[in-house]
Amino acid sequence: MRPGPLEGKNPLAARIRERTGCTVVAVERDHEILMEFPPSFALAPGDAIYICGTAEAVNLYYDEYPASRL
Image (cartoon, rainbow, N blue to C red):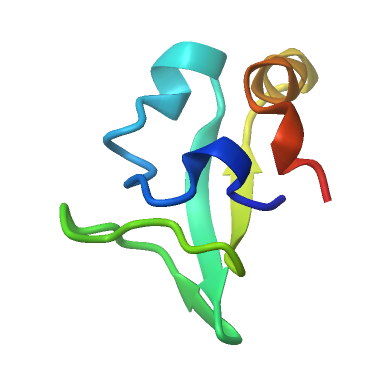
């Protein structure tokens, strides 16, 4: 999915897991898969976010961040 409203934010600092139950497991940027997010990392418009969670958690993610759908 795309960053949508998370653009410019660090995926860990955004507390996505606490809000939705989903965990951001990777970010694809410029054909590179990133799995570590230092405090200085911020999501960019062209990034793709990979999340992991139950079907219910993914639905909560889409409810919280509807602009993230591809």
